[in-house]
Image: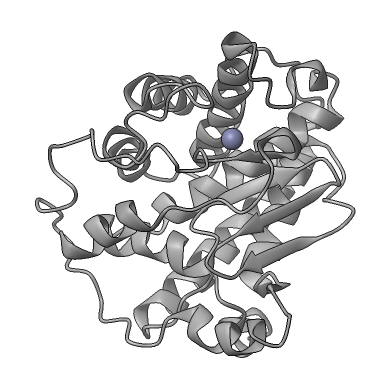
Length: 275
Ligand SMILES: [Zn+2]
């Protein structure tokens, strides 16, 4: 409970809304209105995670470094999700952004996330899907932009419908990818309903986003504003087998108390990958 409350109170977005599509709004608004359970019924006890990823990175930040390349695990799931969407990976890469308390896809074709922020979702639900789905959401924005439905991309303070539509679209993509992986949708539903309950103009209410995410997961397809993915069945089978291997590696990293979203897990990741 304490972790989640801290998480809620810490949200700050350091980017201009017009340039970036965050999973969460830039939290001037706060998000205390969700109420309800935040993981108290979680059957899986959170592991002890005593070394936050960005405590080291923060020291570097004081020397001007605000972000570091994404972890090997994150780069790999972005690659595979892009392959599922049949789109190129972000041209400017992916980054663990210090104290972002958020995640984004930006117009300069870059994905950013905060490794500690993602991992708190995992700790609070007990499931890695809760963090992974946020990366898939950002890939969903990338997919929309590069797959011919990018007219809905970009925050517009005058157009709530547009803002909300693009979020539903990314949520739908995330639900679809997760289903393809045979992942559990409920941890993400919990995050939508509690942490992302009410964020005003930039994002739809969390319960509605949860419905879109869950429906896409359930129906195994992108249900909103989307073109059909044109991958061949053989290609999809290959991608999914690679992603399933990544999921197994991810779970091994998690079991030993490392954060797969943190670049400090890269050595262990590469060891497991090459076994
Ligand atoms: Zn978004």
